[in-house]
Amino acid sequence: MSELQRLKGLLPPENQSWVFVEASASIDPPLITLEEIGSDEVEIQLDLEEWENLAIDHRNLLFWHEVGRIQNDTIPRDGWEMAALAIGLGGAIGELWVQDGLLLLMALGLSGFAGYRLYLKNNSEKRLQDAIAADERAIDLACRFGYSVPNAYKSLGGALKELVDKTRKKKNRAFFEDRLEALRRSAEKARAEMADQQGSGQSITSENVYG
Image (spheres, rainbow, N blue to C red):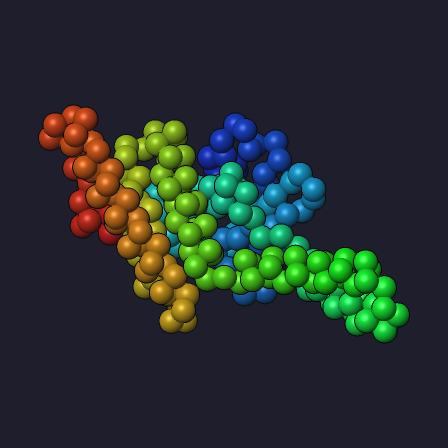
């Protein structure tokens, strides 16, 4: 079984008909990313050469992170905002010339909406929160596919630590470090909940989250 076929088998049933897994055709692609390929279809794209250097458990959790992004509807969209912003600003300038108040308000509204969407897309805090939410979803998906809660946390934590170690750009490395810290806090919360439910239960410590 090829790696792409194996990953397709890790898609939840509700995503199998419209989410596809393919090798990236880009030059110097990211390790794993999402792309909308139609109004109702999404492709998970992989740099297979780098991907297959990772441990299988790490691959699985990083894959489920992307599935989590899909399920949370935080897929990066086409860059229509810049075009809409340009049209809106151009229209506003034109309506100032002809002094049509209604059309001016419509043009300003389009510019404002496009500008707000651009702000959200480029806001680092929202990007981080979306990634943390997808990490939580990845843990849930791992458990659906047979992982124990501690092993799911350990595998995702190990994958993120590996990404930290391999990432040269300081800003990108900090992004993975922030996700790792959020995962550690989530693991400690899960450990406390398991201890409440099961007494001594299975332990999840900050150490085993890091793999």
